[in-house]
Amino acid sequence: MEIRSISVKNFRNIKDAEINGLKRVNLITGGNAQGKTNFLEGIFYLSTLSSNRMKTLNDLIAIDEEYFSLRCRIEKNGLFKTLEAFYGLGKDTLVRVNENPVSKKNEYIGELQIVKFSPEDIDLIKRSPVERRRNLNILISQISRPYLSDLSRYHQVLSQKNKLLFQINEGRADKKMLPVWNTQLVETGTRIVKARLEALEDLKGRLKGLQAKISGGRENVEISYKCSFETAGDAAKNFEEKINVMQEKEIIRRASLVGPHRDDVIFMLNGRDAKYFSSEGQQRSIIINLKLAEYMLMKERTGEEPVVLIDDIFFDLDENRRTAILSVFNGMAQVFLAGTEDKNFTKYFSDYVLLKIEEGKVIVDGKN
Image 1: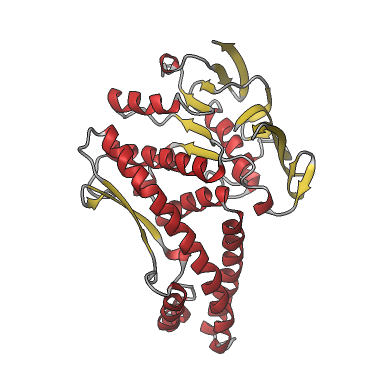
Image 2: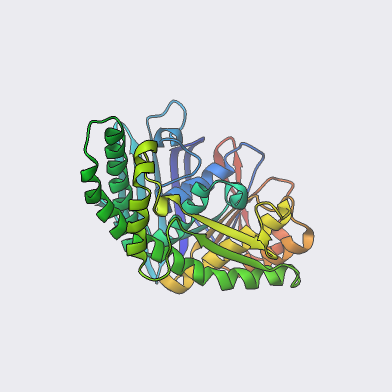
């Protein structure tokens, strides 16, 4: 899979950019706060219709503008497709595939598969469980449309149950109504957890092998899923029983305390929790290798190599680790790699397009 062209209008600080002639390797340079990250964010949004750098979609619209639009042409399985996303002017988000409007997220996400390496991703180990769940959700949603449907339905039901818990706490509703929502949570939530466990099992061996290779066999990494209910045996029954046990606490706290929205992903390095017993460089290496494992998984599940976005993540890696990782990227189908002017990555790539971004303007500087 490759992106052949990109059009960006009024997205963050990028007012108007039209880029054709993209290649397998696309190097994005420019000073700090010029728009490199925003450009990559636009590509990521075209893939996932989301960003972890926004509170609302209005945050993505350029200052003094009323809308943003993103468009790209991709080649996938030997066929060309055009993907578009538009938001603003008082309208809901509009997405289209080959000029045809798409009404549901799960009918769109997966058209352009992306694996993203950014500072936020690289700090995943020490961030909150919310971010680790989100990362897993984005991965699985791109390879499984049923998963995305389940996730959407689960959060709708969760919202309704939480409203009911609040009303019960206030004495304005009867707790006899809770089983209606609990049944739906168990049904969709069990499928979500099963899909997450399967994905992590697939990632586990790949991550372990990559980390051992890059560390010369000195680092053993394990990844596991911390579930809020017992998954062995009849997971659905265990989920339901745990909800019943926690019912009074849920009413008191006015929140659902059991389910995939409360779960976490744990990383262990040489038998110890990597969140507390690993260096910054080790944590970065683990997550870079996790992302490489995600790339392998997506390629295997979809039959297509995902596009890779890399946002200046190498500044505190030693030269050996940097060289080892970049040599892997050099063999991928398509890479967008952003870095400041003083970061000379050209020596790692023999064929590339250089995109220079200055104050939101994207200039195709040259091709080698």
